[in-house]
Length: 69
Image 1: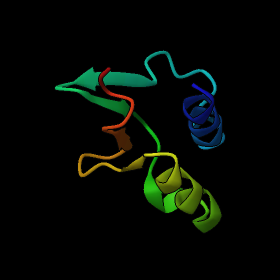
Image 2 (image 1 turned 180 degrees about the horizontal axis):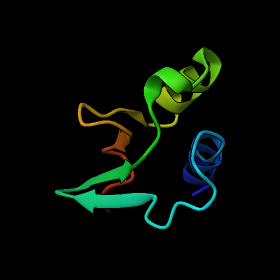
Image 3 (image 1 turned 135 degrees about the horizontal axis):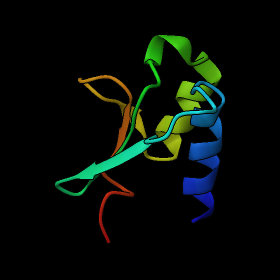
Image 4 (image 1 turned 180 degrees about the vertical axis):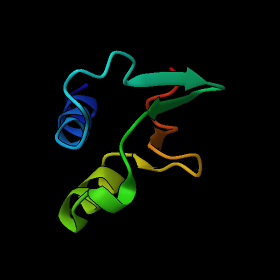
């Protein structure tokens, strides 16, 4: 749980604070929407990878680690 909270905290820095639908899940994948990888610092990208998140092909970030139980 701690890793998920840390990852979401990092991603929140790059997201509109008024975003109403920041996440989605589909087929055991958790998506964090409306965050572009090119906007995220290299240090944050590295940490997100360590936490199980990677840029999604459709934009945003995805996690197979946190998408299912």
